[in-house]
Structures are given as structure tokens and as C-alpha cells.
Length: 256
Image (cartoon, rainbow, N blue to C red; front, side, top):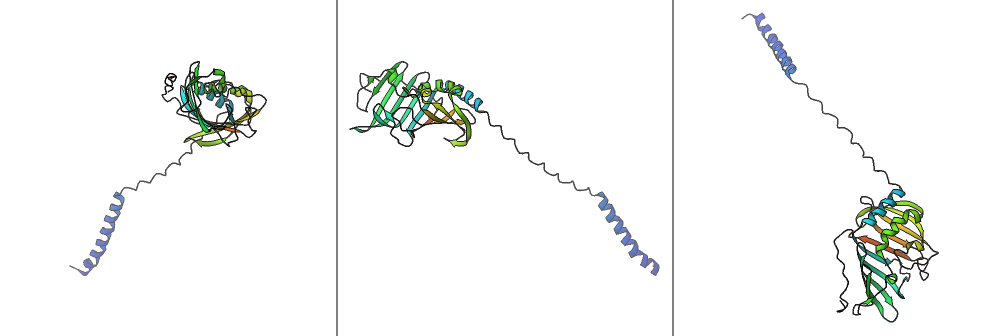
């Protein structure tokens, strides 16, 4: 083989290698570009309903309750009165339309702490003044708390409440609520608190469930009875809404 051919072979090999490399690169698919993730849209918060809508819907839902468990305390222990005793706390079950069973803790002069029990079924009401006392009839107009009157109060609330406003959002009993505040005349509460005296302004604070628009908590601040101090605050919790409950009159013969 000639020297000239020897010199050309390396050059030819180099050219062939470059040609093969070029063809290989040309055969490779271009990488698929990674798509840019779309920006996550921020959900638009639901608008806060108007006070009028809240009160109207709340009134309808309170009227539709078939049952509930209700508790009340004298929040600052200001000495609110109850049948001549000092009211401390109360728990009640209500069954629509007019059945109520309540236990009231009071401090009675000369007796100390006493638990009073009241049961109402329809138009008949009985009370016993201590655990071991006999059941005695109680006229309807003397029942101090008429929780069957909640529906009446809330149906009239859009007309009776003044200076009403939305005061914020809070969690109550594990539920997110809208806090609504306003002022009512004490006599407008007589459907709930029997024989409420007139002439006082009571601040009403309601905690209304954001999702279900039911009442979760209620605070009544101010005098409702003449004997109340001006700073009296009754805090009411509403639970077990529409849970099954049966309330019957006591067996007055046995005292049970």
C-alpha cells in the first residue's frame, strides 16, 4: 500500500465517524418540554350574608326544630332570681311543639344548693322543689322559662331588634359561626323568659352556624327582671338539635 493511501485512510476514518455521529444525533427525538404547571386559582370566598337574611333564615330554622338540648347560666353570677331563690344554672330538653323537661340549680335561703325539676307536656306542667319532694302542678303562666317560645322570639326578631350588626366570626361547639349583635326591649323576651319586666334594654348576642344557619349560642346581657343587676348576663347554649327525645309527664302517684 502506498504512503499516500496510508495517509488518507485515517482522514477517511475520521470523516466517516463524524458522519455517523451526525446521523445518530439527527435520529434522536427532541426532548418534550415539561409543561409549566398552571397557577392554582385562589377560591373566591363566599360573600357574608346580610343581617336581614341571617335573621330571616335563623327564624325559620328555629321554628323548624323538632328538639334540642338547652343550657343556661348566670354568666357572671350576679344573683339573677328564680322563684325567690338565686339562679345558678339550668339544663333543659325540648320536644316540639310544647314538651319541656328542665333541671334548675339554685341557692335557696336556709337550704343552700337546691335542684328544681319542671316537666311540661302540652298544657300540663309539674314541678318538684328538690330531688325527694313530691310533684306538684304548676300553672303555665308561672313556668319561668318557656323554651317553646324560642320560635316566637326569633320569628319576630327582624322587627324587634335594633342597632343590629355582624360582629365577626367565631367557633362555638366546634362549629364556625357568625356573631350577630343587637338590642331588644326586655318585654320582647317574654315569650322565652316568662313575666319579663318592661322598660329595660337588653343586648342580644347570637352565634349562628355558618353552614346550617341554626342557633348555637345566645347571650342576653342586661336587666330582664326588676330584681336583676344591670350587668346580669344569661348565656344560653343550644345543642343536640333535632336529636330524638321523648318527654313524658311524671308519675305523680309515685313521685318519680
